[in-house]
Image (cartoon, rainbow, N blue to C red; front, side):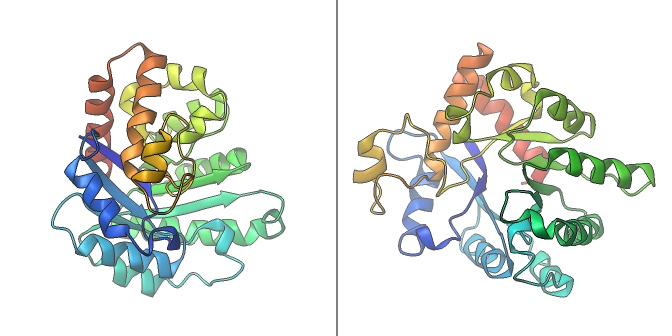
Length: 270
C-alpha cells in the first residue's frame, strides 16, 4: 500500500473520470499497489470539491482545504467558509498554502504572507497539519515559521510539498519537525543528494497529479489506461517515485513503501 499525499483529482483534468481513477488507485489494479489519496484544494471551490469526493468513499480518500498563494490576489480568504469544510472528518490537512515568488506572483508577496499567516492560525485552531506550497521563496517561508515559533505559537506540523530547495533549507525544515514531499519532479531536477540525506522517516511521497508525470510511466499506462491522454499524471504513478527513492537510498521498494505510508498515516491521522 502507498499514500499519494498530494493529488488534485478535484481539478478539471479529472472532471470526466475521477471516480474511475480513484477505483484504479484503491483497487491496486494495473499491477500497482493500492494507493490511498489526499486530494488537495487550491481555492474554496476545489477545496469543497475535494471534500465532496472524499465523502463518497468510506476509506482511502481524504481532503485538504486551503487557498493557494497564487490565488490570493483573486480570491479573499474567508475563514468561516473553510471552518465549515473542516467540520467534515475526511479533512486531513490545511493546504496547500504558503508562498510563491514566481515572477507573475511576486508582486503580491505581502498579501501572500498575510493570507498564509491567517491560514496557519486556522491550522492551529483546527489542530490539523499543514501542506506547504513553496516556490522560489524558501528563505521567506523559513523566516515565517521561525518567527511564529519564537513568539511561542503552538507548534505546526506538516509537509513541504514538492520540495525543490537546497539541503541547507531542507535541514531547517527537518529541524522544525516537517516532512519533505517528493514527486515526479525528482526525475527532472537533481535532488538526489537531498533524498539520500533526508531520513526515510521524514519523507512523504506524492504525485501532484495531473502534473509532473514520472517519465518511467509507460505510454501504455499514460494513454491506453487513461482517457485523458499521454501527459496526465494520476495516483497509481506514485510507485515510480517510490522506486526512485529506493534506488537512491539503496533500500527495497517494500521498505520505502512501508515507511512512507506509516509517515503519512501518522502526520495526517488517517
